Amino acid sequence: MLQLSAALLNKSVMSLRTGMPIATVTAPIFNPDNLKIEGFYCQDRFDKKELILLYQDIRETLSRGYVVNDYEVLVEPTELVRLKKILELDYEIIGKKVVTVSKQKVGKVSDYATETETMFVQKIYVSQSILKSLTGGSLSIDRTQINEITPKNIIINELSKKAPAGVPAAVV
View 1 (spheres, rainbow, N blue to C red):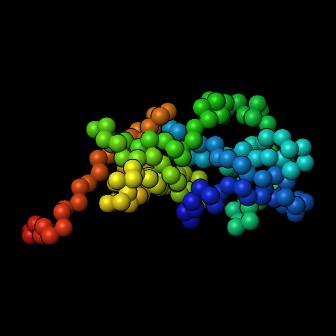
View 2 (view 1 turned 60 degrees about the horizontal axis):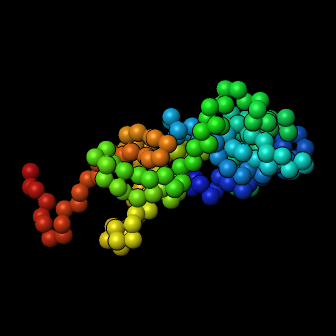
View 3 (view 1 turned 90 degrees about the horizontal axis):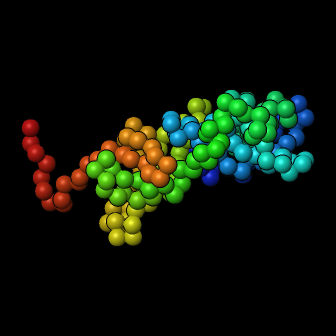
């Protein structure tokens, strides 16, 4: 099921063992190589420390939060050697500029939708400049249209042009 970014954040992390909330999700951890959410930064309910919940440790996603086995699945960032480079990048999708392969500016990412089973970002939503948004609205871009991801931009394939109103479609 696809969920927008707001539906993933500020949720409780609940322990199956105690049946109580143990942390609150504050931000996603993106892998820019494949646009996957590898985990979440969480604020510990007890010590107020910043800990990390890895995606594979989530047993179930509910409307109220994420269910995990126990408090021990939350780890300090320094313990995650495998994710060290991704954590250092601190990549954030929202606010990234979106351009086409031919360097045409499209807009900035305003939101994204994630498949909750795999945690891959499936769609990004791009807000355009005021002038373009009056005529065309915002854009929804599927992950298959993304060509490259750089630290500053998301580069997409060329956008298809709409036929002007009143022009008949070609007859085959």
